[in-house]
Image 1 (cartoon, rainbow, N blue to C red):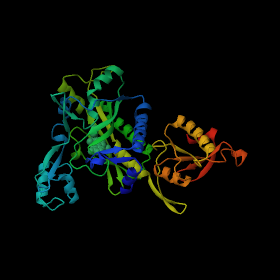
Image 2 (image 1 turned 180 degrees about the vertical axis):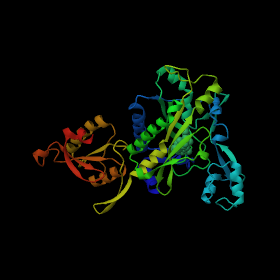
Image 3 (image 1 turned 90 degrees about the horizontal axis):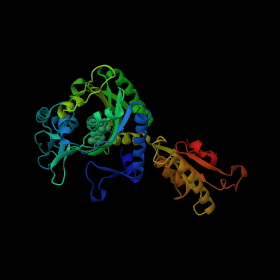
Image 4 (image 1 turned 180 degrees about the horizontal axis):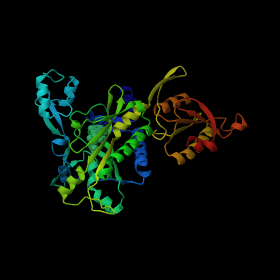
Length: 451
Ligand code: GAP
């Protein structure tokens, strides 16, 4: 993991947030290559779950919502808090359940009071050796004020899901969808995590890709199986090996109050082991019912025959940062090439920041540069994310492109110009990132070849 984090910083994928001021805990900034990877990942997700289907509708709701949304959803209460404990001398804050786990004591599903008792019974101390405060519930929402005098209270949304529920009626009224159907959204979410840690894994500002899939209550189990299949297909599509993914069936006593079944998709993060990557929950009709009661607005689906009813909902929920972490860990590879250790990212071509890099063999030969620009322009028009790389010698360019996961490098040489053998005129060298093998491809065939 340390190697992945170091590469991500060195090569412009992920930087610490507010770096020049010493950072801000739980925030990370995506650099030029990180934003490209991020955008590719989100575009592929949207393609797979929205564009390729007839039963999905997109949404982009506001981050700021009426505070009543969060009261109705239960987020202002104890349901959305973590157990906080403090080092009484240094004031450092910890999650009590994490501290107990570090001492080999399982605390999943326990209340703050129960954790407090366990901490006292086992004499658990702060990592500094100091005594600890009592455990108390700490709400994870960031409160904020809206309006010039801060007249209205609001929160930065802690999940994108509620934006979907409050727009259920709008989507039904405008799109007349047939049940079952889903509403999908990608967007920022914020949680004031007590102890942000492990790079992008637990942060205070992150992005989610969520679907609320509305079904008839009687169909939830069959639809759950279908979506399960689609989630597995997504993880394969982003290159995650099946042996690095585990499906954890959350036991009944640990289910969130609104859920009747939840599966956590866990990834085997290097140096950490299996931990949550994405979640998939059957949320019953809990959310629509709560919003209907609180708002007084009917949130119902009207079938062709029969009375309007509140549909039940299945929720696949993915964190972008955790997916990026898993993708980078999975892609990080070290091997030996030409007697040297080489580091490269074996990213799937549809996720790589650059689809291909184009270089003239020598940058001080105008004829080579001109021909290389011609090839670059053709590919740029077709793929968009094409790199022009003429720094250093060809060997160094290959290493650099390998390290950022560019699947192919193209070099324009004297053979391309027809100066070596006529039959090689207008052909280029295409080098494969994973094997290091090179082949000659005609410029006219390049687009097809890469596709
Ligand atoms: N609407 C359901 C929901 O938000 P969740 O399990 O709390 O469920 C869904 O979050 C996903 O969001 C997680 O599986 C994870 O990928 C991501 N996520 C949640 N909290 C996060 C955090 N603090 N940092 C990074 N990703 C987070």
